[in-house]
Structure formats: structure tokens, C-alpha cells
Length: 435
Image 1 (cartoon, rainbow, N blue to C red):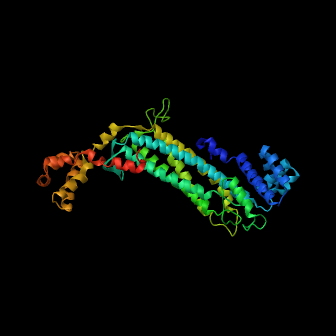
Image 2 (cartoon, rainbow, N blue to C red):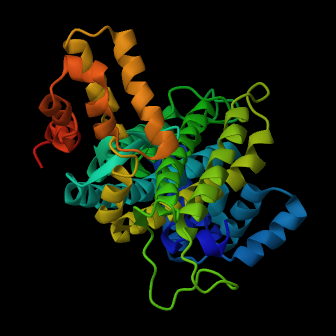
Image 3 (cartoon, rainbow, N blue to C red):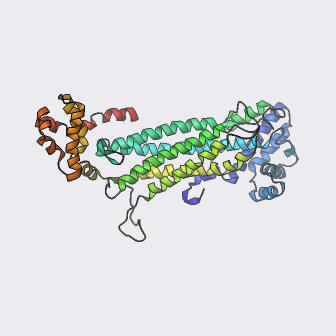
């Protein structure tokens, strides 16, 4: 997590101030529940709230205590007792550190997920607008990087929209999966703390109770959360690479917005490089890199060890902050993307009509030519176009084998670009509904 690739709202979730405030709220809500059950004095719970709600926790002081006690939660509780006074002795009664740490971590992840869902909504809005704008803009489809058949630029953006719609659904599910609370004691048996305390804290913190925990919330939940972030990052990279390819000089069908005063190279003044989408490719790699450690955190010793702790202190902030930045950058790229329909048409026509080869193949088979012979006939003319740059339609018209099966106008009919777009409306309805 570095400032260059960070946005303030997401960074704030992972700040020490936020973490200690969440810790306090967990402890104070637990104290309320215990007071309601009669296990600690109601006056003590009230004092905790009165003093703690107004307090600004001294991070330097907590760090100072931790250097001595070598335990972050104890350091916090010690500092809290300095603020609250004698009544603080009732705080954390029957609880273990992981009750606070894990519940806090899940609160932070759910808040991060809410920001990421909003990011996806922003990206989806931009994709939908540009897809509708270029719904019928012809361009060439490519497989293996080679011209295949015609498509539209709107369809390219529409399948990105569909992909990120699925990403949003997955993230909503991943948020739900990590939105749990555990206040169950040293090994999860509730031996020293009533389950009703957990239920009270969970409701107060906007979480669900963890059905069964050990000393910790099971880490398969977190593994799924970070895996979801990794998949979203892969989708970010897929769209970024598409834009990077389309911006190549030899293609130049679309490019990132190049602002006045922007410079592309320290050496070459003419350069306009796809730096934003290249950056997104790199950031996507980083987010995916956090997935494997999250998976490895699932297997812990017995009821708990702390091998997961150091991992989560790093991947929690880094993965969410990085993806938040990446999604916002991608939304901005799409929103301002410069599109060149004339270049798309130029590239579409570049191979002299070869993009219509399958239609000719099908027409010949319908006219009675075997598929094997039809393929061979069409391919022979196609290879001449590749090799010598000849016109595909004229070659077909000059071929006696083709003329025997099809009249000139029947051959020409297979070169109608609109044929490829007859179901675009159907696809758009599937993706966007009636919009």
C-alpha cells in the first residue's frame, strides 16, 4: 500500500485510528451485553462508553506499551484502562484477543467491500454508456490476434460489462461470507462468555454470528474473499490488455485519453503510450499475488496459531487499496476512451474481405458443394489474398468452381457487413435488459 496507488477513503479503513476505534466498539458492545446479562456492573459498561466514545486513542502510547508487553490487544486494553479508569477491569471479560481481532478484520473487509462494490458500479456505468454509444460501430473481431469475423465495438464493451456484473455478484457474496463475528472465548466454546454477548456484538457491528469458531473465525471465508478480489483483478487486466492492443500504432482503433500537456516519453516527443492500462496490468498482478497467501492461511494448527496474522496485516490493506485504485482508474479510462471508427473500418477492410470467408464456405455447401471441397476452394483464394494482397471477392468471382455453384450476386451477398450484426440487439437485451 503506497500513496501513488491509494485512495483516501479505502486507506482510512486500515488506519490505526480506525482499527482502534473498531476494537473499542467491539469491547464496549460486549460490555453492554454482559451488563445486560448481569455478569458485569451496568455502571461499568456505561463508564466505558462515556469515556471511550469521546477519547482519541493515543497511537504512540499504545505502541509504547506494546514494545513492553509484546501484545497489541493487551497494549490497547492497557491504554483503554488509562482512559476509562477502574471500571476498565470489566472490559474483555471472558474474551480472547482473536474475538476482537477477527471481528475487527471482518468489519474492515465488509467496509472495504462496500467501497469496491461502489467502484464496480462506477465502472459498469461507464461501460454501459460507451457500449450503447458504439452498439453498431463495426470493428474486426480477432482470435489469436488475427482477423476473424466482424463484430462491433459496442459488443466488446458489452461483454466487459457482463463480466464485471458477474464480478459484482461475486463480491456481494464474498462480502456476506466474511461478515461474521466471533466472541466465543479461548477455544470457541463460550466457556467464559455467554453466546448472547456474541449475538449482541454481531448485531451492533452489522455482522452475523459465526456458527462455530475455534479461537478464530475459519479462514476459508477470507480465502474466498481474496480469491474474489483476484478474479476481479484478472478481469481488470483482460480489459486493459484489449485496450493496449487496440492502441498499438498499427491498429489504433482506440486509445487512452491524452490530456493537454501530457508527455509520453522523455526521449521521443511524438509518443502517446497506453500507460494507464499498462499500469492496470501490473496492479492486477499484485492483487492476484495476495490470493495464494490467503489460501495458505486456511490450514492452521488446531484451534489457532498466528501464522495467518502477519499475512492478513499485509494483504488486507494492500489487496483492497490496490483494487480500489485499479477499478477507479479503469472506469476513468473507459469513460474518456478515444474511439476511432474510421480506423476500425479501415482495419476491417484491410484483408480484402477475408472476414467473410465463412459465409462463402456456408453458401457453397448450401449450393451442393461438399464441405471439404468448399473449404479448399475458399482457402485457396484466401491464401492468395494473404500472399499477394489481391481482392478476395474478385478472386472468388474468377474461380470457375465457385461460379459453377453461385451466381456473382449470390457471391456478393455474402460480403454484406450487416449480416454479422443482425443479432446485436438480442445480445444487448440479454446484457442490459430493455435499456
